[in-house]
Image (cartoon, rainbow, N blue to C red; front, side, top):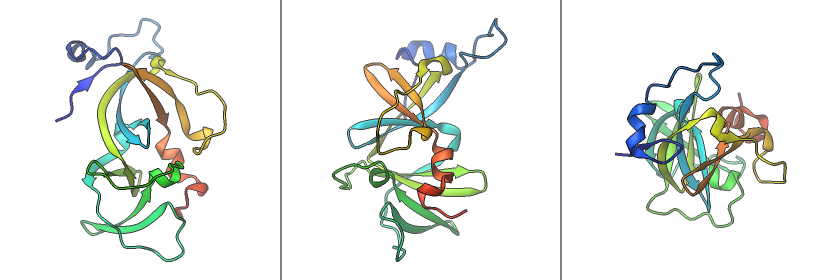
Length: 176
């Protein structure tokens, strides 16, 4: 079971933050949301937990001829043909080697489902919206439009992704 922690990293405060405190401004600026954090290469990423349907053991998919390198193929998940994207390839990692911790995160994005392969799931963390800072503009393997921001959690820097926008973008390689 994963321990739920808040942005300050104090598990003792988690129960108190499960119910957000009233916002005196009425704007909800510091409301906390939960994020699934995971490793891809040396970096740690975070995505909105509401997009996650399940986390599965990674199994080799059925290859699709002519698919982009980051689309590894498809699997049959309880009668649904699910495209599998290797997020490690999509994010430009140098060495793509499955590890014992390699998993497939199944995302449910509206009426679309897709699996993304990552090096391992780290945690489920609660981050207040004001803890997510804008990312500096720079060249990177992930389009800056899909980086919601950066957040510091304990001594770790998280890259917060807009996974819905990323998966639905034409550049991701999945047809609509």
